Length: 347
Image (cartoon, rainbow, N blue to C red; front, side):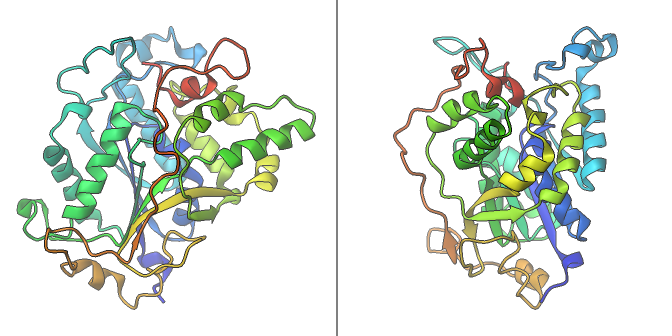
């Protein structure tokens, strides 16, 4: 069985702060066990709103938000124990209106997929992950940068092991598993119920309204990581411009979270190694290999049309006909959409 210290995990995200709100406790757990973890931020988050009221009029923040976000990302990476790479593209912002305005020229969501995929392939071939995580085809949240992150990551996963693809981007390396970060309606319901039982208001009514109008995902993998929830929250707080320290991210006491839902959840999308779902480990099937690196260096088997020959393909989402929308939802009647605001996707 492969020792933990030889394993590598890459988490590909759209903006700085996404890595701390999606799968952060899992990253911290694996890093604490000796797994090398690399976070890739596709954009610099330059168009994100300042969501912390205490910093909205801060002169330094207003003068150079791009550098502030870089500094925040460095602090969050240190908290989680991960390394970090900027892919170098520009935040697209979240367009609003009917009809929607065009996306800004030069933004990530308008980059040719091959250009962005080659940049990510270079990082994959340099870091050599066995497992990659990202968002589902709807971006988890239908922000144009999240959707583009999915498209680019899937393209890079397919191309990284192909010696004919981007030959100047390093020696081929084929990651063995690709996961999507999971948003679980059941988790939000469980936490709401636990808060009510403890005598508090349910905090996730807006989140539930948002999640229930999205396709239901087939979550395959629940990683026990409750011991690292505190590190996740500290990493989130490091993104001080984006995260209100008194906001919904921190409303549910940690001990209640550990009891009610002690995992982070993922959807296995593709695997080149045999697996058995449900799983509790992103490296299930990889740990059993005598030499995962040797397997990743081999040119993978492909179909006649060039697609990877896979041992596992994830199920399509249920309720695929549901309309995706970023229109604000106000399930608790307080005049704002807490999920939209807390996610940092207000512009």
